[in-house]
Image 1 (cartoon, helix red, strand yellow):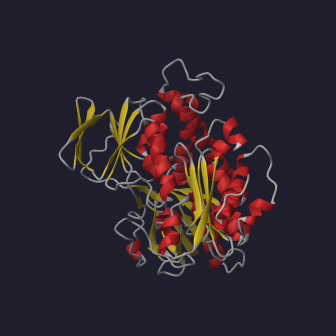
Image 2 (cartoon, rainbow, N blue to C red):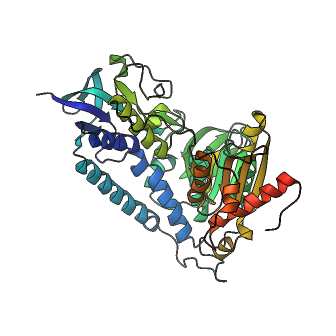
Image 3 (spheres, one colour):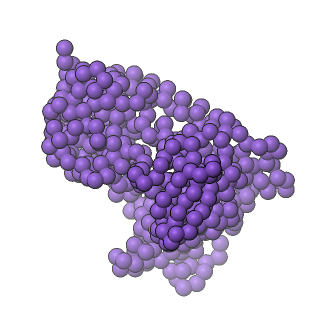
Length: 465
């Protein structure tokens, strides 16, 4: 007997889980279909949470977070094992899977494991069991997977994509990473922190070009200090395993050798098995689905959210997209649109976060702006934690001092950015930082002194701190 629901959600990652919780909260009967044998999607199992946990693990195991703070080197006297490296990651994943299951159970969301495909616009079928389920609305929240060029022989032994790298069998001595985007830079930093010889290759001549140029330059310098070598304006044309080493041929014909090779350049939407042709939806060549401002596809009762619709492909954004889509589907006037202020957190070493305009964007838009900067090295808390190279830049309008952009590199950047983001949300000016009192000593206090610096620049003279 075919079961009917108000909404069926395909995928249990951040977008799927929060979509389900939102619909259930307003009393709807919800089914989630998950193709893997655990909930959480790439965010919990192969992407966001595991990689960020490994970053913290690498900082701890290498002693880098403590090194130099107390005049001694607190690094381990024994070789780090793969079990050491993966322990915390595995622990956190289990805890998060348990938390998601509890949340779905609390909201009385039904959960079925299996690969779903469309029969028609109101019906899906489970490939493994042939069970059919129907609903008024169907949500596609299937996420994405690493893009894998066919000319690289991925083997999960020497040649990895960004999901498979989480299953390393041992800590290698060397690694070549292709792709100086967010994923590539994050992995390059965490592996370099462990003492692995890392080479990062990218066809561009700059890492993370969407960042404020000054922040990108500082990150490049810091990554070089970690020992990372950069090969810009080139690419890997072929790769093979020879004598237990990866032999990589570059575009110019040069050969380089490494114990491991990580390809981390792009992701593709998980749509190939959905049989979207049965409902008249055509994904892009990268498997991504077009949606309107309400996250409806060209079939109005079928919605899509999260990585499967492409940019910005952030867990935080995906959750909000799911909530907004469900509110729209059931005409619940709660969340109606996504804010245009989306913070970015990049978990390199050091950490980076930003919200709003960069200087480059302001120039292109002919905005009359000024900047104010403050460094962790001038902040007592920055000195206490030994993170003196941290840096905050505020971008604001010359006309009314309205805050336009916040750019941070350094410890806790992804936490600190929210102070600026909320100021921007309420159309605040840099005077908000001047007039308010911050705990002392805190890193947050850098906002006040960046604002003072900005006022000094605005008046043509530096004000006393």
